Image 1: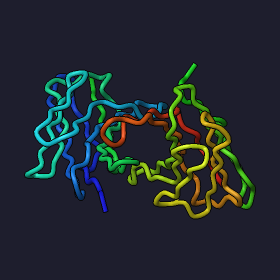
Image 2: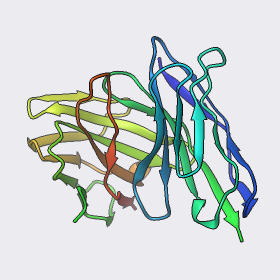
Image 3: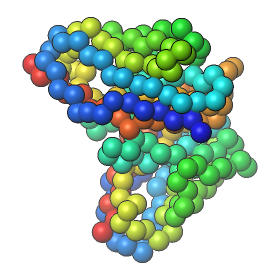
Image 4: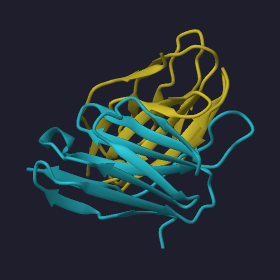
Length: 110
Length: 115
Protein backbone atom coordinates (compact mmCIF):
# COMPACT_ATOMS: atom_id res chain seq x y z
CA UNK A 1 0.00 0.00 0.00
CA UNK A 2 0.87 3.65 -0.14
CA UNK A 3 3.10 5.00 2.61
CA UNK A 4 5.26 7.95 3.51
CA UNK A 5 8.47 8.06 5.53
CA UNK A 6 9.80 11.35 6.79
CA UNK A 7 12.83 12.19 8.86
CA UNK A 8 12.42 12.00 12.58
CA UNK A 9 12.66 15.06 14.72
CA UNK A 10 12.74 17.08 16.63
CA UNK A 11 14.75 19.59 14.66
CA UNK A 12 16.04 22.73 16.39
CA UNK A 13 17.49 25.57 14.35
CA UNK A 14 18.58 29.14 14.78
CA UNK A 15 16.80 31.91 12.94
CA UNK A 16 17.99 32.36 9.34
CA UNK A 17 19.32 28.79 9.16
CA UNK A 18 18.60 26.46 6.25
CA UNK A 19 15.91 23.85 6.83
CA UNK A 20 15.46 20.56 5.03
CA UNK A 21 13.05 17.78 6.00
CA UNK A 22 13.40 14.55 4.07
CA UNK A 23 10.36 12.67 2.80
CA UNK A 24 10.26 9.50 0.73
CA UNK A 25 7.24 7.59 -0.41
CA UNK A 26 6.07 4.21 -1.62
CA UNK A 27 3.10 4.16 -3.94
CA UNK A 28 1.49 2.47 -6.86
CA UNK A 29 0.57 4.70 -9.73
CA UNK A 30 1.20 8.43 -9.66
CA UNK A 31 0.06 9.99 -6.41
CA UNK A 32 -0.06 13.67 -5.59
CA UNK A 33 2.32 14.77 -2.85
CA UNK A 34 1.72 17.32 -0.12
CA UNK A 35 3.32 19.08 2.80
CA UNK A 36 1.01 20.11 5.62
CA UNK A 37 1.96 22.28 8.59
CA UNK A 38 0.48 22.27 12.08
CA UNK A 39 1.13 25.33 14.22
CA UNK A 40 0.78 24.94 18.00
CA UNK A 41 -2.83 24.41 19.06
CA UNK A 42 -4.17 24.39 15.52
CA UNK A 43 -5.29 21.94 12.90
CA UNK A 44 -3.24 21.06 9.86
CA UNK A 45 -3.16 23.36 6.87
CA UNK A 46 -1.79 22.81 3.42
CA UNK A 47 1.67 24.28 2.89
CA UNK A 48 2.36 23.16 -0.68
CA UNK A 49 1.66 20.37 -3.12
CA UNK A 50 2.82 18.77 -6.36
CA UNK A 51 0.68 16.63 -8.60
CA UNK A 52 3.16 15.10 -11.04
CA UNK A 53 6.82 14.23 -11.43
CA UNK A 54 9.24 17.18 -11.56
CA UNK A 55 6.59 19.61 -10.31
CA UNK A 56 7.84 22.06 -7.69
CA UNK A 57 5.47 23.23 -5.01
CA UNK A 58 6.25 26.47 -3.19
CA UNK A 59 4.68 28.67 -0.55
CA UNK A 60 5.86 31.03 2.21
CA UNK A 61 9.50 30.51 1.17
CA UNK A 62 9.20 26.72 1.37
CA UNK A 63 9.83 24.51 -1.66
CA UNK A 64 9.60 20.82 -2.50
CA UNK A 65 10.15 19.00 -5.80
CA UNK A 66 8.37 15.78 -6.76
CA UNK A 67 11.22 13.38 -7.66
CA UNK A 68 9.89 10.19 -9.18
CA UNK A 69 13.34 8.65 -9.74
CA UNK A 70 14.19 8.88 -6.04
CA UNK A 71 10.57 8.70 -4.78
CA UNK A 72 11.18 11.79 -2.70
CA UNK A 73 9.54 15.11 -1.86
CA UNK A 74 11.97 16.88 0.45
CA UNK A 75 10.91 20.17 2.04
CA UNK A 76 13.38 23.07 2.09
CA UNK A 77 13.51 26.67 3.24
CA UNK A 78 16.55 28.84 2.88
CA UNK A 79 16.14 31.09 5.92
CA UNK A 80 13.77 30.07 8.69
CA UNK A 81 12.03 32.38 11.13
CA UNK A 82 10.75 31.81 14.65
CA UNK A 83 7.25 31.79 13.19
CA UNK A 84 8.13 28.64 11.21
CA UNK A 85 8.17 26.62 14.43
CA UNK A 86 5.58 23.91 13.84
CA UNK A 87 5.05 20.25 13.04
CA UNK A 88 5.45 19.41 9.35
CA UNK A 89 3.74 16.43 7.72
CA UNK A 90 4.50 14.89 4.37
CA UNK A 91 1.52 13.18 2.74
CA UNK A 92 0.52 11.42 -0.44
CA UNK A 93 -2.87 10.86 -1.95
CA UNK A 94 -4.60 8.26 -3.96
CA UNK A 95 -7.98 9.20 -5.36
CA UNK A 96 -9.83 9.37 -2.08
CA UNK A 97 -7.59 9.78 0.94
CA UNK A 98 -4.31 11.11 2.24
CA UNK A 99 -1.65 8.99 3.93
CA UNK A 100 0.54 10.98 6.31
CA UNK A 101 4.06 10.63 7.58
CA UNK A 102 4.77 10.69 11.31
CA UNK A 103 5.47 14.43 11.37
CA UNK A 104 8.64 16.38 12.11
CA UNK A 105 8.67 18.94 14.89
CA UNK A 106 10.71 22.02 14.02
CA UNK A 107 11.70 24.63 16.59
CA UNK A 108 13.40 27.84 15.48
CA UNK A 109 15.27 29.83 18.13
CA UNK A 110 15.73 33.58 17.93
CA UNK B 1 -16.25 31.43 12.18
CA UNK B 2 -14.13 28.44 11.23
CA UNK B 3 -15.04 26.56 8.06
CA UNK B 4 -14.67 23.20 9.84
CA UNK B 5 -15.87 23.17 13.45
CA UNK B 6 -15.32 20.38 15.93
CA UNK B 7 -17.01 19.93 19.29
CA UNK B 8 -16.01 19.39 21.99
CA UNK B 9 -12.46 20.74 21.79
CA UNK B 10 -11.43 18.92 24.92
CA UNK B 11 -13.03 16.01 26.74
CA UNK B 12 -12.01 13.82 29.64
CA UNK B 13 -13.99 10.67 30.17
CA UNK B 14 -13.78 7.29 31.86
CA UNK B 15 -13.27 3.83 30.46
CA UNK B 16 -16.50 2.32 29.18
CA UNK B 17 -18.32 5.58 28.54
CA UNK B 18 -19.86 6.45 25.20
CA UNK B 19 -18.42 9.53 23.56
CA UNK B 20 -19.46 11.45 20.46
CA UNK B 21 -17.28 13.95 18.65
CA UNK B 22 -19.09 16.21 16.23
CA UNK B 23 -17.95 17.95 13.09
CA UNK B 24 -19.74 20.49 10.97
CA UNK B 25 -18.54 22.34 7.88
CA UNK B 26 -19.60 25.36 5.89
CA UNK B 27 -17.41 24.71 2.85
CA UNK B 28 -20.07 22.78 0.96
CA UNK B 29 -17.73 19.84 0.48
CA UNK B 30 -18.97 16.33 -0.14
CA UNK B 31 -16.03 14.43 1.32
CA UNK B 32 -15.47 14.30 5.08
CA UNK B 33 -12.87 12.47 7.11
CA UNK B 34 -11.98 11.56 10.68
CA UNK B 35 -8.30 11.20 11.55
CA UNK B 36 -6.57 10.41 14.78
CA UNK B 37 -3.20 11.94 15.71
CA UNK B 38 -0.77 10.25 18.08
CA UNK B 39 2.79 11.41 18.80
CA UNK B 40 5.27 9.72 16.50
CA UNK B 41 2.54 8.10 14.41
CA UNK B 42 1.27 11.02 12.41
CA UNK B 43 -2.37 11.01 11.38
CA UNK B 44 -4.24 7.79 10.79
CA UNK B 45 -7.55 7.57 8.99
CA UNK B 46 -10.49 6.24 10.99
CA UNK B 47 -13.47 6.72 8.63
CA UNK B 48 -14.31 8.71 5.55
CA UNK B 49 -17.50 9.61 3.73
CA UNK B 50 -18.08 10.76 0.17
CA UNK B 51 -21.72 11.67 0.74
CA UNK B 52 -24.56 11.00 3.15
CA UNK B 53 -25.04 7.43 1.90
CA UNK B 54 -21.39 6.54 1.36
CA UNK B 55 -19.33 5.73 4.48
CA UNK B 56 -16.09 3.81 4.44
CA UNK B 57 -13.70 2.38 6.98
CA UNK B 58 -10.19 3.69 7.19
CA UNK B 59 -7.11 1.96 8.51
CA UNK B 60 -8.06 2.03 12.22
CA UNK B 61 -11.86 1.84 12.42
CA UNK B 62 -12.13 -0.81 15.16
CA UNK B 63 -13.78 0.63 18.26
CA UNK B 64 -15.24 3.58 16.36
CA UNK B 65 -18.44 4.30 14.44
CA UNK B 66 -19.60 7.30 12.43
CA UNK B 67 -22.77 8.95 11.27
CA UNK B 68 -23.17 11.35 8.35
CA UNK B 69 -26.33 13.17 9.36
CA UNK B 70 -26.21 15.66 6.50
CA UNK B 71 -23.75 16.87 3.91
CA UNK B 72 -22.36 19.30 6.47
CA UNK B 73 -22.25 17.04 9.53
CA UNK B 74 -20.12 14.00 10.30
CA UNK B 75 -19.88 12.62 13.83
CA UNK B 76 -17.52 10.09 15.34
CA UNK B 77 -18.58 7.84 18.21
CA UNK B 78 -16.68 5.70 20.64
CA UNK B 79 -19.26 3.24 21.94
CA UNK B 80 -17.17 2.14 24.91
CA UNK B 81 -14.08 4.26 25.34
CA UNK B 82 -10.77 2.71 26.35
CA UNK B 83 -7.52 4.41 27.45
CA UNK B 84 -5.65 3.71 24.20
CA UNK B 85 -8.21 5.86 22.40
CA UNK B 86 -6.70 8.85 24.16
CA UNK B 87 -5.58 11.03 21.25
CA UNK B 88 -6.17 14.19 19.26
CA UNK B 89 -8.95 13.72 16.73
CA UNK B 90 -9.30 15.75 13.55
CA UNK B 91 -12.17 16.17 11.17
CA UNK B 92 -11.34 17.22 7.62
CA UNK B 93 -13.21 17.98 4.41
CA UNK B 94 -12.35 17.95 0.74
CA UNK B 95 -14.05 19.10 -2.39
CA UNK B 96 -13.73 16.99 -5.50
CA UNK B 97 -10.96 17.96 -7.86
CA UNK B 98 -10.27 17.18 -11.46
CA UNK B 99 -7.45 14.81 -10.60
CA UNK B 100 -7.95 12.72 -7.53
CA UNK B 101 -8.06 14.16 -4.06
CA UNK B 102 -8.06 17.89 -3.55
CA UNK B 103 -6.78 19.79 -0.56
CA UNK B 104 -7.97 18.71 2.87
CA UNK B 105 -9.33 21.38 5.22
CA UNK B 106 -8.97 20.50 8.89
CA UNK B 107 -10.82 21.45 12.03
CA UNK B 108 -8.89 22.55 15.09
CA UNK B 109 -9.04 19.13 16.70
CA UNK B 110 -10.76 17.45 19.64
CA UNK B 111 -8.49 16.28 22.41
CA UNK B 112 -9.92 13.19 24.09
CA UNK B 113 -8.54 11.69 27.29
CA UNK B 114 -9.87 8.35 28.48
CA UNK B 115 -9.02 7.53 32.09
